[in-house]
View 1 (spheres, helix red, strand yellow):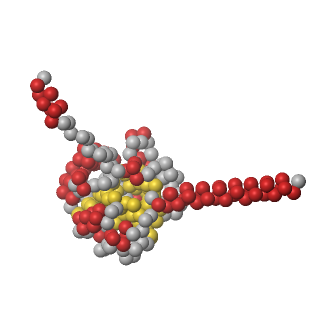
View 2 (view 1 turned 135 degrees about the vertical axis):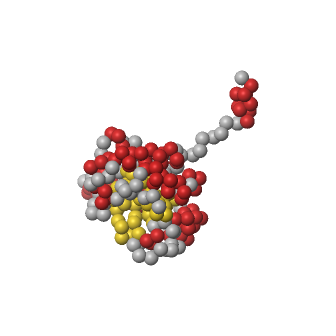
Length: 240
């Protein structure tokens, strides 16, 4: 009887450690896939130092805003972050004061498809919860998709999402939710969970982002270019 009790205790202890070890591994896997987003407000970034943090895998970089604003640090951040080994993507800050075509012209000047590892982001800030002009938003989403060959991800607050994007029309778009108070109550692919993060290489605060447990980096990577037809195929087509 004592032996049986001993075996049962040993089994319980073993199960306890297996469960907690598995939970630890799962939690660590989620922590490993983090990213940041930066703009001119972070100043000069030491990307080599940022990349030494093995939990930071990607970065979204502010490129443009509205019709005429272009982030002065964009090109430097893009080049040096890529060189440091991070996956890079770009975001445009939406303005309700100018047309979709005017904003797309600004984006096109700065954001080159060939330089992007991640799908573009349309940043719709929380102050747009009132007059957002959804026809203009829809047209800009359409123009960005035409330019980059993929639907852009929509960044916004939960309030704006619930008011304007929580319907079937936007079901195929990845959603990037900003919520610094707790876990989002809406669907999302990426969650900006703090605006006061710290990491080596950046002075002051920086935004940190992580994925929903059902999503990963592969979901927001730019699609690979379609393979060009071979010369032999072209020749055959012409001969028909």
